[in-house]
Length: 277
Image (cartoon, rainbow, N blue to C red; front, side, top):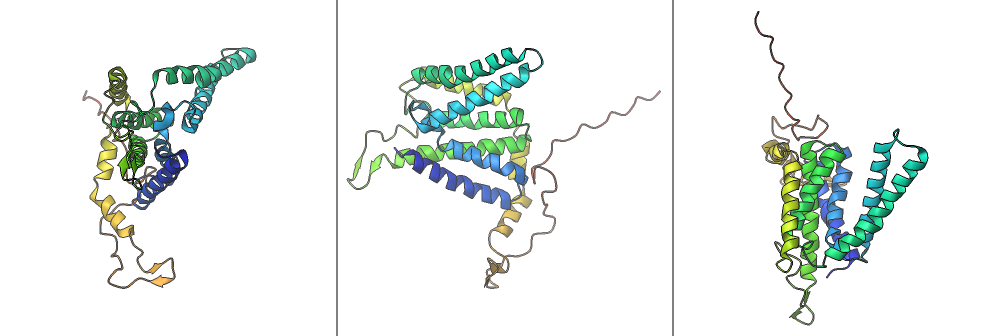
């Protein structure tokens, strides 16, 4: 398997490449680009959460502990005394950081269900739910974050499979085929649980209509093609040959004047006309 440094380095490169394309196509507003890119980087290390002593596992559960402890603190503020709030905050922090983490690792198996496409889909949709409901992002932005997570996750699984082939000794290691799989045949209950979690996440997730409409827009792809190469000079130094220079943006192409870039806003409800007297 690839090590942590390789996973996060390749994941960062892939997420950065996708972010560059997203920015050039004006799909979303700039302020949304950083958290979405981080979702892709997170996806590139997330499958190793099932390794008890791995850095991704420790970092993820530490982050979850901080998130949930402050969520409990803020939601309980005004209803309890300061001493009680301290106890709730610290109790939640320790429960998630150590209790939930230890319980998770008693059930999880490395290269098990978390190294599967089923888990990648669940994490992608769960990311969408978090962006839409916790971060209060536009549904199209939330689904784009889920897409970044999914691609980052697949990058991790692909790297693990590549590192399972020992090219120098021209042999295939025993771990080959254990990372990139649809689900885990060895642990059917874990696979069933992940499938159920995926179904629940899809049910809770916002509609993907805005995301699909935005990415299928001809204007968006035309604008991306127009931004692919410099129009006059490379880095304002080397002149672009006339045969290579790109043409102006096609008439009618749209620019992201709304907060989400070219992703369409949800349709506003039409006012109901009063009934005739």
